[in-house]
Image (cartoon, rainbow, N blue to C red; front, side):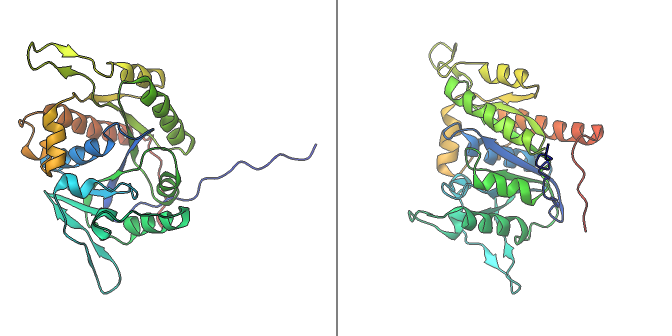
Length: 280
């Protein structure tokens, strides 16, 4: 019999100079609060004393500048590098800063690959403990570009407890596994709601299903984030709740997620399970 096709080899993925850890925040579908988690995670990490950058890779829906309350345009250097914007103690770059207003981005895959590569390689991130990347929902071109281009420390997968969201989060977990990226864990967003009248929890979208999915796939649960209007208002107003510190209203669960992420990163490094990438 003729030999079968050779197994496909993953391209060599290099770290970003100066960046210690690269954390991808992903979701199987839209509408689960992935960007809210990414923004507040970045701010919480910064408040906990880490040097943090935030790359908004959701090119079609770049909402990070709105949530951070920034309209400042990035500056280009003489050698065509990009200086990221400083927003609330975090270095940030987003297509929303380069293409402000309501003009849509209508791009095919090769153009997406080009802009994401520039954001990764041409931005002067400097020394960072964490570079958080807010990925678009799903498992498309941007995810593939990221995974093939740089050394990703691990992925945080965001979901709600609803059955529809969980069906897609399983695909996201499988995607990262197939391309040999560690899944740091699952965050169950919009987990429960405390009735303002009686104080009892109301499971609007269900509760605990994200935890069950994480257990079924053998990945940790990084935390559950409640439904709290203050979290939504903070994002809409450009003042995310994590910016006020861990003692701020509605911020405790987000800081719990941030601490769980740092603990998982250290756990993977101690175990030597994170892939080692050669630097030329």
